[in-house]
Length: 407
Image (cartoon, rainbow, N blue to C red):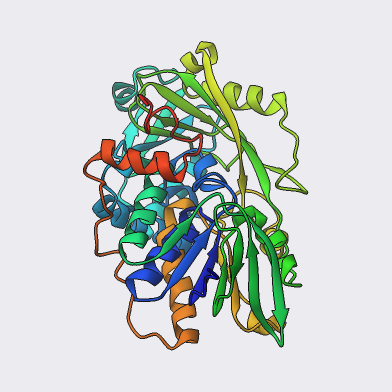
């Protein structure tokens, strides 16, 4: 039977599934599709950091303020999707002391709580820190398990009437008289979908989806490697307190530490090189903060893709400035019932979804405000039960060592 939802969401990462949840909670009939399992793209291939905003405080105060706001929201609603570790920005002897002070002051100015630690206090907190550490800033970073987060959002979306279809690749879009009228969907759907409105939340693949409707969404994804090593003695997230560069973050899991990352432009999100130098550089640079990881056994490695919007990348001029999100209303391009949402960060997925849902509801004439920040996600206080949903919907490599690891 042909599906005729009010909204078709294309893309089963955090932003897409978060949008489906928000739409469904406002009473909108929504169907979400993804070509693979949920969380199989950008969301589930990240380093798993729940940002405090400190990384962006001096370069993008607005983005940093959004991060700390959403950090607090997710701690309230996401339960076992979050592991509260805290974080340190570590200044080594060779690092710029002025940058350290600028970082601390910028955090304070946007409401990110900080505590400055001297070398001894930092090493009391993380005994394996390098002897070269001179100072550190303690911030409320945390770890996020994206497979659980996406599954919990999908469960809540379905609880409110949404249809969630992983393993359902979009095959084509038909545009007539300035509107998308049909979507041919394969896999578990294997049918035509006739939506009233379409949300393109396909991340790094958003350009490919848009092209099916004759639209031009200029993406410039970059790849980054994550190297997970056997190491269970790290408490907080470690960030190198310097201009963002390769190998400047270590994210603790229960028995592993995830080292990352690199930033290399790719032309095609489906075909790109995975270079050994990225692995070697990430290990070497992270070991400058935490020497034992240099000799720790590599458990697994994976590459993720950042869904960067090319015009923004051109304006920014490179790495180091917070990457915001963009809503591209395609009514301006002659297709009145479509929007693409690109860029952004996993930490701010819910805010991105709320903003996108606001636009869609305005177009559909649907009243009501978002309530996603006020309602706890389902099963998040029962991680074993939640991980059963992960097994159904799909799991990315970021948290494969923790989420359903005993399956």
